[in-house]
Image (cartoon, rainbow, N blue to C red; front, side, top):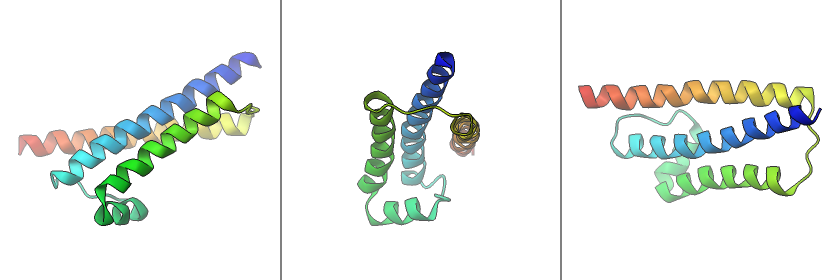
Length: 107
């Protein structure tokens, strides 16, 4: 079971990193008017103040890392499953953002 805990921790760290990278890429895309934010909450936050958009994205990642480092989470199969699904979907979303930004520079 120890190996499963390590895998789960790595997946969660990966999610935290993806969230920071995605937030940065999304921020750049929004400022260059290349993409629109699909998440209503994040879109409202960006319209109100772009700094709050980035602050929330970075804070969520920092909170996830804090949980992983300073709490004793008990890994379960369901948590692992949803972490892997989340990491997969988030990776796809991030590649979509990168693709849209890349295509916009070609046009």
